[in-house]
Image 1 (cartoon, rainbow, N blue to C red):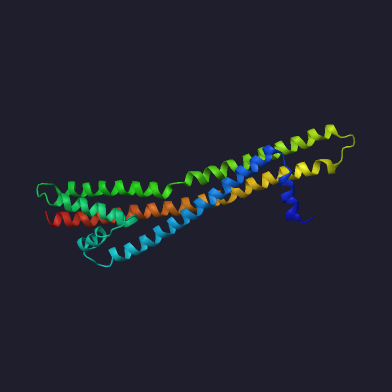
Image 2 (image 1 turned 90 degrees about the vertical axis):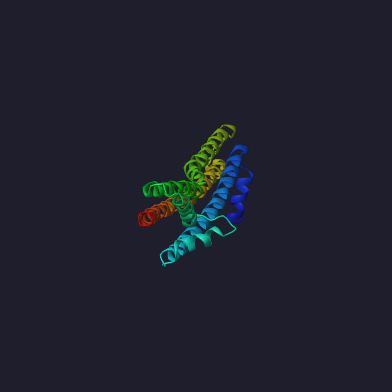
Length: 226
C-alpha cells in the first residue's frame, strides 16, 4: 500500500468526530486560499493603479482636465483616482462661491478625500480578519482532533488482552493527520495576513501622502484665485 493510499485509508477509518474536524479544516483551508487569491489580485491592481495615476498626476497635466477624464469613466473609480476625484469635485464646488474662505474650501476638499480614503481602507482590509482567524484557530482545531483520536486509541487498549504499538498506531496516526491539516490551513493564512497587512499599510501611507501633496496644491490655487 502506498503512503498516499495509507493516508486516505486512515482518514476513511477515523472516528466521526476526527473526520468532522478534518472536514472543517479542509473547508477553512479552501476558503482561506480563495481569500488569499482575491486579496492578492486586489492589492496588485491597487499598486498598479496608484503607479499609473501618480505618473499622470505629476506629468504636468491640468488638474481640471485630469478630473474630467476620471469623472467621465463609466465604471467606479478606486484608489488614488477616487480620492483625487472627490477632493477636486468638492474644491471646484466650494470655489464657485466667492464668499467662501480659501481655507474652508481646502478643508472641505480634505474632508471629502478623507471619506473616500476610509472607504478605500475598508475595502482593502475586508476579509483580512478571516485570514487572521484561520491562522489562529486552525492549529487548535487540529489539536482537538489529535487529542480526541489519541484518547480513543488509548481507550481501545482496554478492550484487547495484549496491548502493542500496532493496536494504537492507526489511531495515533489518524490523530496526527488532524494536526498536520491544522498547520496546513494555518501557515498560509498567517503568511498571507502578514504580507497583505504590510502591503495595505504601505498603500494607505501612500494615499495619505498624496492627500497632503494634493491639499498643498489646492491651497495654492485657492489663495491665488482668492
